[in-house]
Image (cartoon, rainbow over all chains, first blue to last red; front, side):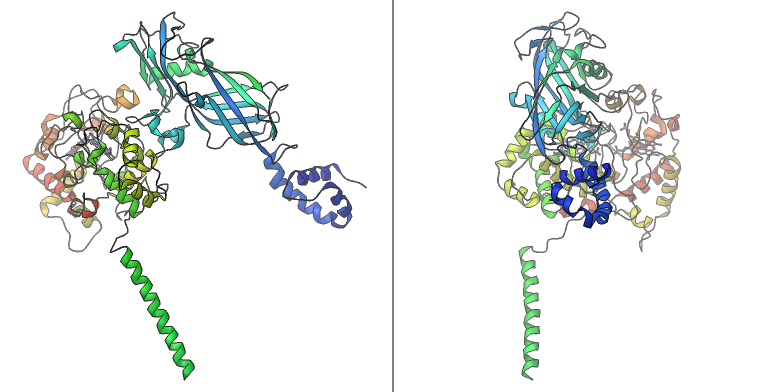
Length: 286
Length: 345
């Protein structure tokens, strides 16, 4: 029997769509009878079902994966309040608060198809261990070779009405006098700081030009070891997060001259820095 | 014959039943008027339209209760209603700048609260961009209620009858900041003032006309003031300097934008209900309308960001001042000021 390449593709489409219980063999038997009818029907199905799922092997199954954010300062583990670190200018500093938003996580496959994880907003807080391990569910199974996300909270949500979940202003990551989210918050002390109590206060946020601090991070995943999401395998992505990246990368920050920013031009300097070095994809456990 | 009377009996019974049913409903909710967000016909379309915050009587009532509850502040002495008083069109009468807990004096005059659904940004400097998030600063500011959201939420969770009220308003008794803010937005968003004499004249309602003095004032106003205080909301929502100081103590809009050109500029305030909202300007420096008008006549300072149209001030003789003043008083909406729906009950 002759089955054209196109028909095979259509068959494939039907097989992948769990809503249609036509198996390859039963289909073969009925082929002659319904050939014309199906020839008409299948392209429609193709358009409506195959296009959406994209991936051929695993069109309709979903699974989950986790992302771990390991906080460091220039290679050393981050410990709040106690450890002394050095910035690129050689100035000592300690960190008391380190937290930030990651949002709108987008995964891509080698063929260019992408999956935007809906309502993906995460607040990662060094002082709250569970927040450093994020679980993402309901992701279409497949091999992903790229991840992209916003450091902070997208433009629209900065101006939206009252939010809940991690975007609840209760978490102290929302400016009440200049409404909008604080994307990255780092507070601590440095003997070089001229502020009261040697404080260093970096509240980075703002989405309006020229002081827009919204940054996107992306990482290519080695195609030899992609993020393999399977119903029976929930991989883990491991990111190293370098808190010291706020202070170097594009322009080195000296706490003697810049020790306080809550939005505005100085926040842009810091955001341009961390856009380069805050996140590094370390490895994936498949 | 029998059949006919049975049919009649059935009919009668069902009518009686229907009547009883409807009667019953009335009994459950005695004379409660449905709270509506009404848009005066001479107003443009509002920016906030309750689409994502379904307006209900229960939501409005909850928001109002929170608005008037002083127990939410650090020393339990200050509610939203302390600084936003209905008889002052929800501004703060006789207070130049706001007074919060511990008698702390803020730096700005409390603006009136009405027609907020038409406002695109909030506060004198436009720092807050959504009606729902505008109460946040009042809760947390050390010079206002000096509390934090966690404390507010846990107070409401643990204080009767709040859990029940939240359940009525949102279908579930659990309380979070989002529901607190949405209910407050239902209350303050419904505060619409559009029934002044001016409005009735504009809508050509029967029996309302300007006196000759008011009309002369209206014409002067259109000529000299409405480029900024634009009808029908009496503000174009822009940020400008009207020359109060050579160097402003309060940086105003530039606090938000960081732009030098915005230094010392403030949102053009509405002039509706101006009769009741003294003192005037962002720092409440003028106690009455005479002082405010005299400012335009003789007090405009040549600040670097002074609005171009105000260079040299706006000459007004005494007659003109009186005429403008009597026009401004036609912007008073007593139905709004006296509406018991908005009062602390």
